[in-house]
Image 1 (tube, each protein chain N blue to C red):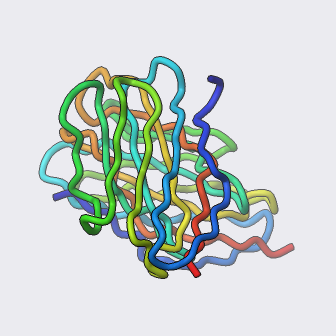
Image 2 (image 1 turned 180 degrees about the vertical axis):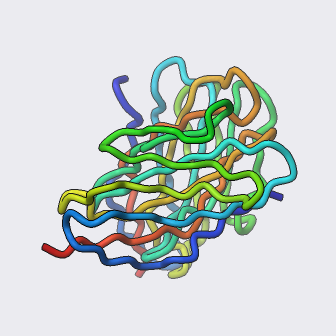
Length: 117
Length: 112
């Protein structure tokens, strides 16, 4: 597609429920990232996928958080047993394979705003 | 591990005045540095990036940034601020892991 697409744009859930957030990257982008942005705070790295390599999960805050990506397409971020502290905007970004390590330019989606009551 | 510090949480400037937003990074090797802008209700947009070469880089919307290795800094500047520049600005660093790490952001307000 023309840009990174995320759904839902808004999600309100009750504490203890599971939620799934979806990200559709730009076609041809091999890398996909998930970030969390709490109100008034910066972007917190969660997970990074590059092609078929093992993902970098070093930013996932707890085992309630998981993400999957099939090949170089759609990714799903799942939060189990949601807590109020999980309320945030979850941002997805994608990039082409960088010509050298680190030289990756990310294009961000508009985000999924999660509110846990 | 790489990290980014943006010491100014909030800055207010008058329209037409010059602007400098500070960014300091920590990374053991040559960093890749970025500035992104997030306008209210919108996604993040890349302003500019430094990969190598000339340490003064030009970006969109009249912004520029200068990489100073000796100071581990990558400050963002604009000679004359417009009201539409009011937004939140994020500095970020990337390295061999391809993991882009962001600072906590600087919120810019522009007074008429």
